[in-house]
Image (cartoon, rainbow, N blue to C red; front, side, top):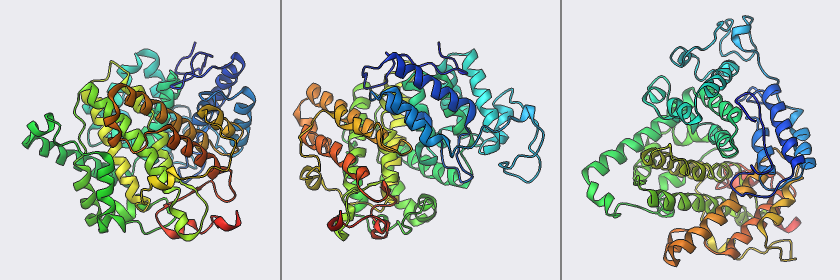
Length: 484
């Protein structure tokens, strides 16, 4: 049995896709995830790059990968991980990763109140991990998540845990996704601890954007509540994205190709750009009603995949092969968590709607950061896969990524794309063909093209991904199409 201190995966616990798995693969996944929990730090370098091993192993396992593929993925990525850092209740010596030059304080968090001063400080990740493990060991998962993510105390000016959850290119959210989806309290504890150590000036800017957009949306809906209830104020996500692209200030906001700091410098760091984006993001509304939340969730997942797939074609204008954008894929990879959270009866409709609004606003922000790539359903529909054998089974196609040597981004993207197809098809079947107009990707043929596009792009020469695909300079290291 699993616990906050022990990972235990069973063959019937394969996540949203509900694939068949073997006892051998389940035991291997459990062993490798336990090794990661006990031996590896949350970041693999001093720049805050995240340890992806938990996502990688569970994405592989959840798409039917055998035990040998799980072991190969672990072996490929364990060599560069940083070891677990000592917790401060057992260590009073200075730590090289401490945020200050003085020795870290000797501390053991007895409550979240006395832990708040250490939020955003990487050196205290082991302490937060132990704190949240103990909390999850003594109380139900839903109580812990409510208190430390959704309660007033978790959202006060000193904590801002929900803002932190959406920081770091959504990595805390992705970590939480795999923990909740696969019912592993140890990974949920990792996600909460990871959330706690995100912060600093970047999170302040992110929080300013999210909270200001929410405030304006609330004020606007309060003055016209009847129009919201009647459905007159619900703007499709794709329409908001088109509006962003038609705004010259937002379309030209991205200035730094291949820069990880683009979000906080070029977009949120420039008031005129941020204000223009907040104005559009404040029009994101999700009414706290079950059917509306379901519809907007499918729309969000579908649109995120469409935008990311469109970005893969940006290099065509300068003669480059197709590559997905590194930032945009994270917004696809994180999307399935909303399906899991929506299924939880202990989350109120108001919280579900609010989380979805925040994700959509993050999607809009990431679109600007990546240079507002042109949307191109025609190019996606007309894509000619390199594999001409005509394989159409999504899981068989994506299984080509089971032994692909990377840090897990590729299989996570493939898994999320399959989930997107499943929920889109189910939604259209249940609600009728008229809903297609709000879902950019709606046919099996287009989904099949996207599955092949994912495979062809990562299997092709050059980097697996580009950074800020809407800028020509981002494609400098990508091979020319004529030479591939």
